[in-house]
Length: 346
Image (cartoon, rainbow, N blue to C red; front, side):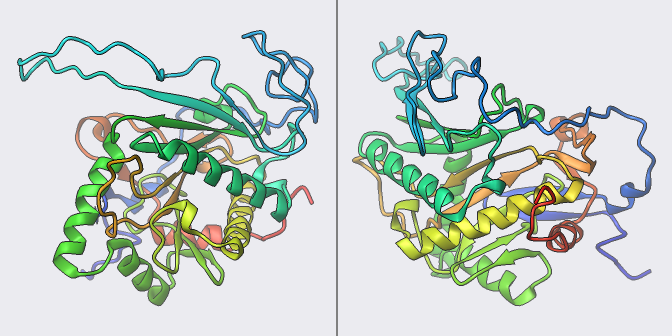
């Protein structure tokens, strides 16, 4: 019997994280009798006087959200980290280690209207979002080791507010995900003399089979080692280490691929597609080391698998042994690529 990646189970290696993922494409044929989610757009009215992220509404902290016209950034009223906090007592016990942390958490509203997501925003408005991200990265990066920009979109991803927004968490330490990526990218550069993700982009551009969309400066693809069914990466075609290194023209072309990708997501199941997304680049802070091994990139992690009502669960074998997916990366890329670049609502 000849191996067929679309039919036979196999494992794929993620060199960024040094992990394997089990791929079981034959399982897509099984019937689904498990949990389904109710279909709703997660998009409320244009303005909700009870929504604290809407312009002119008082938040639970008593602070008035101003009548903003573009992006608006404020310190989270319920932050996960604090800028000034006492240090815990040190322990020499290897089983009970504790370390103090400092940081800040901010919220950034993308747009004043609650029913306008990235997929429905203009390119110029998305460029404004990107410029605001860069401003936050540069400001917070002067002090903090890691600045994590991320968006949780949709109640399925735990988002408690449907107004288009993201969060920015800056911390005094290097979190687990970027720490592992830092190690593996550094080792790859030392061994091969080239940044890992630049080699990866070159190979994917030649293969073509996992690319969703691309333009002059950026490529969006389903990574070979993807875990989530329609997971994608946004990668630059030149070596960029951090978001603040991109040019004005690259901001516009990045906005373009972000819009096209999110439109394709929404068109897949004719719904406001839920996801968690974020950006990874070289660590920051006053003591950041040489970062030539880093390549700036974005990650989109959507949970939907078969329809707008069936999500993928990370459970059982995946929690206890190893991550697993049914749909192959190549099949996912083809389905996304085939979606229209025009939003179904338009």
